[in-house]
Amino acid sequence: MNVIIFGPPGAGKGTQANNIVKKFNLHQISTGDLLRNEVKNKTQIGKDIENIISKGDFATDEIVSELIKNAVFDIKKKNKLIFDGYPRSLNQAKILDSLLKESKQKIDFIFFLNVKKETIIKRIEKRKILEKRADDDLTTILKRYDTYMDTTKPVLDFYSKNLNFYEIDGDEKIEEISNKIEQILSV
Ligand code: AMP
Image (tube, rainbow, N blue to C red; front, side, top):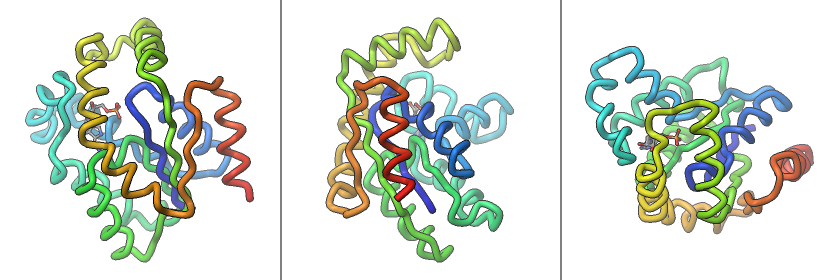
């Protein structure tokens, strides 16, 4: 099965995706991680996007598509994908649709982790202490939230019509959210 998990930054997507990966033997495709890797490895893409990411803006759809193509067409990962932080714009959702069609796959479950802005701020502040991610200062957090609302809301509208769309209350405890998701995936 292929899964999309999305929600505003700090909603707990990464944590939930990690858990699903372990329990259901999937491959996590996090565009945030892929992009940070490019920056770390100082590739051409990395040099182009370093500023963009640190400001909380979005990388271009071309760059992001290039990075996820490898995963979608990787035969070992076929029908075992969980997308975390992707797609983030309507255009990316359409690109993903066509990449999946081309590789004879589909999305089986879509989870939207809905969470309050205050909860997100609290969680990211905590993560900052634990991981010290460079892009996690408060201004960037709020910028990322606003960018998310502007650009990703249409993705929500695009997917929410689907029968396999599940909205999950992201303000609940991590374990409760995991349980809900596991129950849905186990049916
Ligand atoms: P994340 O770790 O998912 O919160 O992503 C960190 C940052 O990477 C975001 O604030 C964006 O600047 C960039 N990013 C991650 N995924 C995408 C995407 N699908 N499209 C554009 N930019 C992205």
